[in-house]
Image 1 (cartoon, helix red, strand yellow):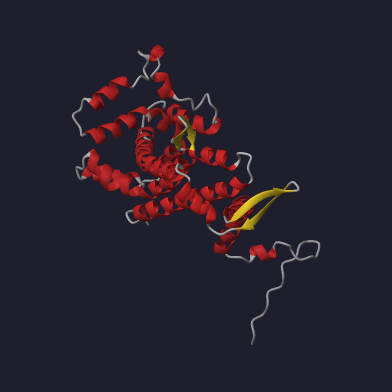
Image 2 (cartoon, helix red, strand yellow; image 1 turned 180 degrees about the vertical axis):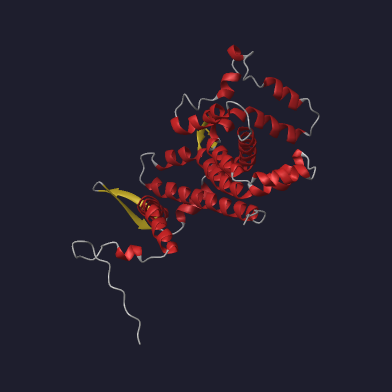
Length: 320
């Protein structure tokens, strides 16, 4: 005998429930459905506000642009714009190399500072909520008041005796007897420490969440075994937050490429602003050059993120 079919669920009014299909779904399918619903706004933004401009930029980089009857038109010329950017323009490749080197210098220091601050904020002490809020305020406000350059303030004559004056630390590094190249790098880190602290709020929050997800029993076992604080950090904390380090690397590298500055005509400007000035200088022919610069800059950023994160991901520990 065949199995008897269960009668359809009906509402009191006699009609079938419109949510009967949802009730018949198992938990995994429901989770996937709600995941797609929450992901939908991001997908719409990527398709219409990222992929479409990206495709247009790539097309413009292969064309000679001209303004006719108030409309921007382009004729296909191949890779001539890229040849001009990489071979004729004397500044672009130099600035691109500067951007990449600054990223390699800034990102490791930013990750280290963010992890160090997160470990301090994760401790058990009074007023830790207040100190956590200090690092969240710049993210929420994102104003000049919240993100002003403390390093510049500390170097003024009025702030010679200020608590933010870091001249003594610079002198300590210079007189430490370290090699000249290492000393120059450390001095540069000291000068930029306040800027780094005010821009690593997101990384601090990510590391703080990762630290709080570590089971306290692991630290208890390490303490019972007589591990030192350094051993505990190397064998428990660092491996457990390694997935968070990978996430922070992606964010920090992208942020570094977006905000890094270069020197052009004795002026310090963002690299993106340098590309903008060349593109919109009043001549439609430069639209193609600017599009080629933008696409090369995007490809370089993407390649840097992929290579660096690919190397770091080999040492990431995932706890089951």
